[in-house]
Amino acid sequence: MKLGRTSRCTVFIFGLLLSLTSLGAFAQTAPKVYHLGVLSPSSGTVERLRRLMLPELARLGFAEGDNLVLNVEAGPREELPRLARSLAATRPDAVIAASGPAIRAVRHAAPTVPIIGGFIGEDPIVAGFASSLAHPGGTITGIAMLAPELDAKRLLLLHEAVPNSRRIAALAVQVSRDAPNIAAVKEAADRAGVELLPFYAASRDDYPSVFAAMRSAGAEALEIISAPELYTDAAMLAELAAETRLPTICEWADMAQSGCLLGYGPDLAELEHRVASYVARIFRGAAPGDLPIERPTHFQFAVNLKIAKALGLTVPTAILARADDVIE
Image (cartoon, rainbow, N blue to C red; front, side):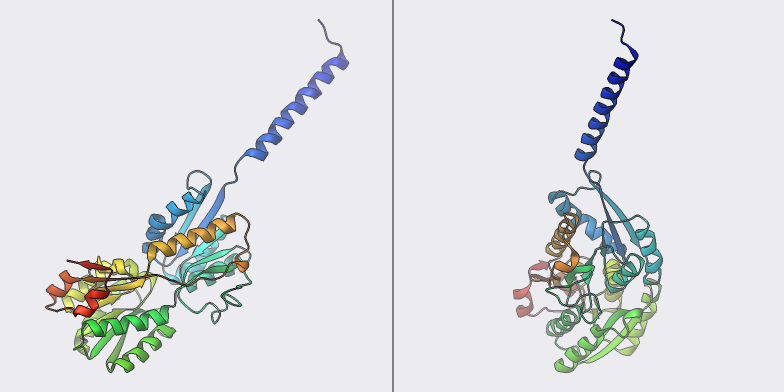
């Protein structure tokens, strides 16, 4: 049967409407793809995030390769502003920024983008990241690490483990020279009746000369001050400490596996899971300023007896009794 011109137009319009309706339905059902940025001065923290945070984020419904695109930028602290601009160009839905300098770089490059501090090593209120821990009120939330307090506690643990030490070195990154961590460790050293010898490294190329300087200064033990870069270089630092015969405490329990005598810090897996929870809540519409900044609640303490034996040390029973992990 032949259709007239009017009938053919009617059929065409009806078909077009059906097509548009189908396209609209498809657009409504197509899943949103979320873009998550990561900025860090340390490749080690990025590896840790991939290992511990991403599986938890997938469990919460955001899986890389499915509905999640991960954009990572990692490099020296002086490069963070440039790397943050590169991240901002990807139009992320949120950014995980590891360290205070990374948070500042992202905030400057992308003022409206939600930022999850994973982890905030300085006081978030003093740093201007939040109005209060309970109600940050801006674009930044995350985990406040209590870094100065924990670094001070590590000094006391190290002195308890090596009670005859009277001169304890502290290694920090060069840009931390005026950070509150060293001041807190110095106060702890004064309370313990020991002399603190601060040393600073601008990059890993400085490590050999810094350890030689520790030896010349008569250091008897060493604390690795908390910093993402020093976490990444844990194995290298532990090897130099062994060569210099310095019993060493590091900021995370798993750093004892890399060769530190002692490792003490928050439960890493728990913290990374909490970072994943922040990301998921922000992706679902929560404002970062409404999400309280949390603090660590569980801590892990590891002792490496193989290192103690190599250094000819006997670790006190009281230290071993408190350890969550004893490496033999």
